[in-house]
Image 1 (cartoon, rainbow, N blue to C red):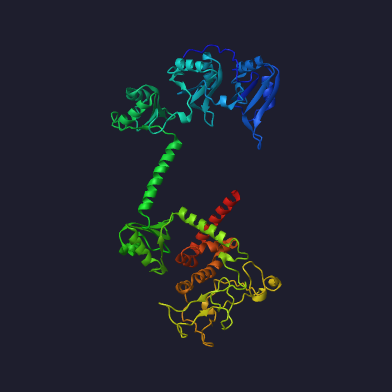
Image 2 (image 1 turned 90 degrees about the horizontal axis):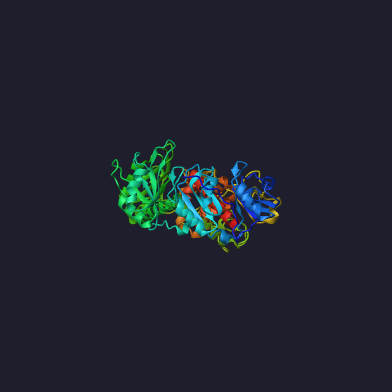
Length: 609
């Protein structure tokens, strides 16, 4: 393209200040002193201000310069525009304080398919011959490299139209450019039914712009054609074709998708999409597919844990195949292919899965009882725990001096505990239970009956801890004696989980014949099995207390700071899962960490509100 004519002296449009200039694209290190030194060579300067962040005081990349005389401002634009300061060319234009006029888009044109060597000054010089330019800018990335398109704004619509008529389709640095009116994003269409830009992939290496243009120009006028290449100039196998008319673009996509006339490679032709739009569409598609799978498998997918390390997929299938048709079966393993002790089994129907849960939950597989439940997504499980925690916080919010998981602390008048005789009932002296109090329920089906008969009940007295005044210490670390004045009658007992039950002599509960204690069992009893046997005959409150007394010391050993809250959260889980946590230290640690995450999220949300 021939060199442009000498640009005229820029005159301000009537709606802008004739003495105030806007300086953009400034390097962050530029100061007012440097700008004053630069602009004072033109004429007397009234004021200069570099706009900065209010907090960090770092430059925002633009400034305002005010001259005394309008001719000096016009001459500054003509002489100093795009002059390099601190390594970056400064873009100068008249200051437009009215944002409505600044964003109106009047006289604004869009240029694309620019050569990478064309900068702001080259773009300004090319279009200055068509009228007064308010602004000219080439879009650049974070490294300052041209993105191949730019914008020029004239002071009148007529000048912009002349530039479009003269430059559109011309060659700039041996590349044909497209010049057209600027359109805002919401005006460009680009939806599924109205688009101009077409994406073509699966191209053979021999297919370049000329061949692509030859194939697509049959469907309508083209504004640009490009095949993407690597650093060596070799085709990447995809490109873009832009039509002037949306109908032509739609027709090309409809007829050329699957085109395989060149090197037997079928082209994929579709509407060009931005990366964010494409990612959002794919995410929506995958989410819909996942929801469909979840709905299809709702109630039919089981989660199994507490598996022995020797159980593999085949053994797991053998365990569950009698309950229905298994569609998938997998034991979870770590990176070293070692079993994690958990697995998933999916059945063809929810009825089969329900039957498997009923029959297999708690069943011994080898030497360990299985935990079987319906599978839940991690997000759903976390949301359920958060909701339960929030509900518990609301429920216990107005109750003073509440212990863990909503229980009144031991020693509060009127508080009842499992194993304590009701008011008015006379019986032998009973120990005040604290956390770790382990009452034993009457024998039931599958449990041996002691010589005291079916109505005989026993508790395990907790021996006093040595070295603590008063013999016992509360959860908060307060010892008896000096601190007993604030909690007289309160007896907080901390259970030693390492203590074996056969070391403690049993004492009869109320209703047992005096002087006839049950002899200790011949073999050590499994505390979890005993606890599980107690639950069916206990009331809901008693069940909660039993589980809490067994669970609290274990949680306290893992996370002492939040043991009370975490115990309350874990007690909202299914009883069989709580029993598994009492039995499995690894599973307990994992659940405690998950509960801590929920607590931190709730605290952060409350702090944000």
